[in-house]
Length: 134
Image 1 (cartoon, rainbow, N blue to C red):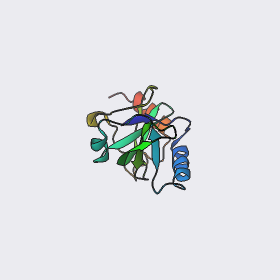
Image 2 (spheres, rainbow, N blue to C red):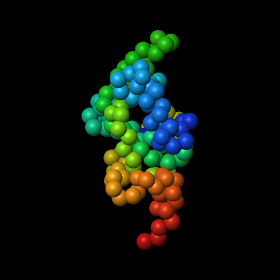
Image 3 (cartoon, rainbow, N blue to C red):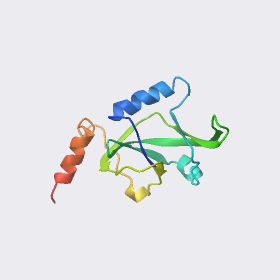
Image 4 (cartoon, one colour):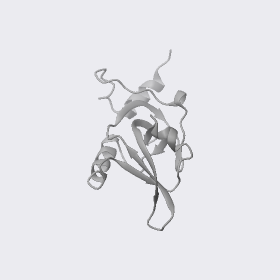
């Protein structure tokens, strides 16, 4: 699943937001109005890929997809995440509403620790990747 991380300037903003959420919940969660039809698939090893400033920059494993009732009494969804944020190869993504399913073949690759790539700002990694000519 891919989703815009509205209001975040970088991955640190997402991490700080989730730390605040975890003051009320045991794990990071995100509430959404729509309930994914493929929720079982998402909770069985799926991830949410966060788009920050026009780039898919990080992913989180989805550990549970709960149907809840919102404050207005309507059905809604609570996505429960593993707290670990996994940096991925920055991938441009145009704005969209809601969330979208992401085919496994289209998912950006995880960045490996110790390569120096994680420490480089995501926008610079994306620019370098676009500039590379093979």
